[in-house]
Length: 334
Image (tube, rainbow, N blue to C red):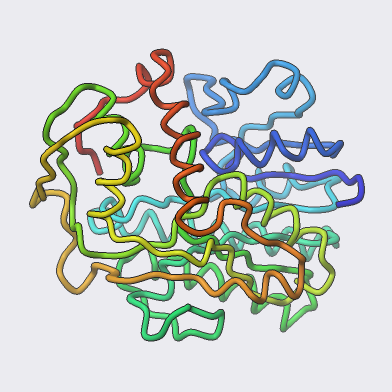
């Protein structure tokens, strides 16, 4: 990317905080939008290096409020839109909050981008919109199938973003990351769940379904994908998968992490952690050729070797006592 004034929504989250770090290191002028709260918490931005945070303008707002969103976007050239509710189990309980945050929140960003004549918006999708793969590897023209309220809300958000490109020429690119993992991720995700249980000395791993396969993308590769999409004029109006192109079952993943951590464990399936039968996405495997063609992006952590390297780096972070202390290993929350 050339130097620009950029806004990151969802900057207080897992991917957002890593993206903010990368943008600052790349010399960008960064404004970080975090969720307004009464604790004055900036989420994971409170834990980045001081020199990074000192270089960032932090604004607290609510993605559901069009006035606050537009104010946060004033004066920016590019917006990376990551703010969203992402926990699938919670979407079963509170689907309306996903519509308000993910669909209406995206509309707020895209409408403001049109009004303010921004250079471009990078809208964040998810591989969950594909549902269980009908063919692999999954290309961007794979049918969309919402198997959870979360996935439905993201399909709606994606279509809102693309509709503004088609209707008004609003410069939107849709980035569709497959399962991202790495330092700072919530234990609602499977890799931190496994690592923290093992790091806490548990001899039995409590997980959900073990058979489904996923394409896990290390956080450094996902962030590099965001930067590549933002820099590519050819990405405007396009949907672009960001995935490693390697799949592994959850059961094999758990055994791999246990091996890397030098642990022998029993793996059990907890009923509370299972999705409803028709809601489980059984297989996800990315085709990433379009990303290579349009942006030049390639995964640095590719194949089994790349996955294991990313897992080692993730394990190293989570097993630091000060980091592990931020989590509740083995506790399942929606």
